[in-house]
Image 1: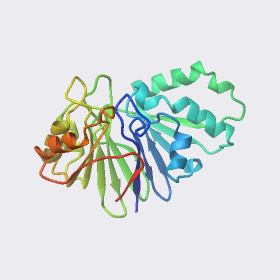
Image 2: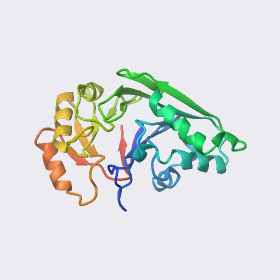
Image 3: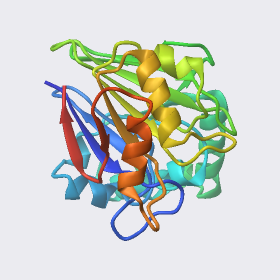
Length: 251
C-alpha cells in the first residue's frame, strides 16, 4: 500500500501551524517528495519518515513557496553523507531555474557531492513522470502564473488514485487529470489570476467524478475553515475535508 503524507497545507504565506504546501509519496521502493519548501529534513522527521530513503523530488513550478527548500535540503543530505543518486523531475523551465539557483551556491564544488539527475518533462497532458512496480505518477500542465504541473498518483498494487491540482485556475486539464480518482487534492487560495477558490475546487472535483475532495494551499492567516468547506460543498456532492499538516492518506 502507498501512503501520501501532506507535509504542508498553506498558501504562499505560512504560519506557525501550517507550512507551505508540499507532500510526499511513500512506497517500499521509492519515496517521492512533491515540491520542496521550508526545511524538508525537519518536516520529514516530524512525519516519522527517514529522509535518507528519498529517491525523487517533483517540482511543480518555480515559485519560492514551492522550491525554497531545494538548496538547504540538498546541502543537508550531502553533509549527512548521502551517496545514492537523487532524481529531480519537472518542466524544463522549472529545472533550468533550479540548476541556476544551485549554481549560485557553487554546488559543483561541494566535495563528494552525491549524483543529482534532472528529468525534464514535456508540457503535454498525462506524461509519465516515473513508474515502478508499485506506483505510477503522471503530470499535466495546468493554468498558473508560470508553467506549472498537476499530478496523478496511481497505486499499481491497490488500484487507488490521488490527484493533485498544483497551483492553478480551474481548467479542463485538472478535470482530466483527476478523472474518476479516489481523492482530489485541490488548491483553494482564492479566485484570482492563477488560483482557485474552494467553490471552484468543488466544481472541478464534481466534473472529474472524484470520490473525495481535500482543500490545500489555502489562506491560513485568519483561517475560516468552515467557510472554505461550506463553499466547496455547494459545488461538490462528495465528502470535503480541509487538509492539515502531517495528515496521512493510504491508497
